[in-house]
Length: 472
Picture 1 (cartoon, rainbow, N blue to C red):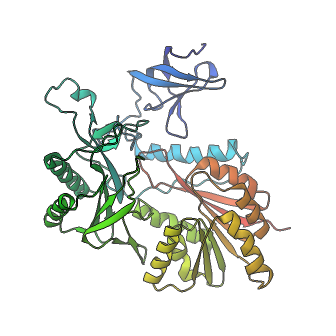
Picture 2 (cartoon, rainbow, N blue to C red):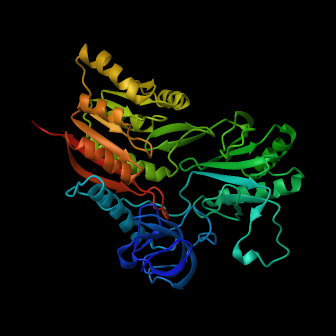
């Protein structure tokens, strides 16, 4: 079969690629199609054709896979949040493990690495402790709504159609947030509709209401509500805040972030406290954290505890070790490890994250942590000279938890100069995990990799790799 752009073909889906797209291979030529599962037979139109692969857009199903099960969420076929909801959870975990294993084998040529079965999420619904819902002055209609003249298109509060910035699905409920979040979301929708003040236009960049962000404390069952607007209107947003706080005693904090920026990001240029405290508290293990509207915190609380327990097990600290944590963020991993280490140094480039890390350490009465602000590739060389050459105190264990893009090659070079006895590498991207482990494998034995599912019904997977310095 010769695949041509803008032509429609029948495809049989044989696999799921990393990124969540289905894979067909007519005559061995890879074609990637979104929103399909292995076993599906579909009609799809080729929208991109390259030398070694093509991408096609689903037109219709010819025959659906026997692997499919009914999705709990009515929006699963349209919203980008949970594309794998029709795939049984056990099968999702199998594909996620395969994506990690195949990345190590195909990208890094690391063929003999032990990849354990995925540690599952304790909850596969109602697990997210943070959700951001966009306001739009023009909502996107579901196919079932198109022929209903009574449905208005003038306002939507919900999530974006994948690949678009201006198409918002008006959600009545989201299955991956706790149920109370759906009630709060629907009350906010009703208030906005009755306010007489327009939502922000994602094309016109005019209007007032921009985002609703909800944060939930799993352990304390408290909520933070962040109302993001394009400008100030204290009387209006305070009226909404007072209605919410009266109806929901579980709400501990309501804030108003204000931003005039055109970028579709739910972070204000400044913030006003409306009701309660400017944060909620959450626990990871025995440690307590203050989480404000714009703090970074793992979105699956119980999943984070699973992840950090594996990091702790691989680090195998005895109380005598000096630990260096790269990309330390708001300090969750250093704080989690603090009781078992002699000293931990965290490095993070985001100043606000470092401030939060220091506050969280103080909140938990931890004194053996030190946080440094700066670009890791610049800070590490100065640490080499200042902390090691003169004092003789070496790093015993290094924790590396980089962003999706993985480690900068300059950081990798500095790590290979330090050569700590043990490295625990935490990754949210199997491709960059493989790329970085290929470099580190010149000096380290990779003992095993443990995938951890933090995001059910998506292709995303966290992994923890256990590395030990090779003996000469």
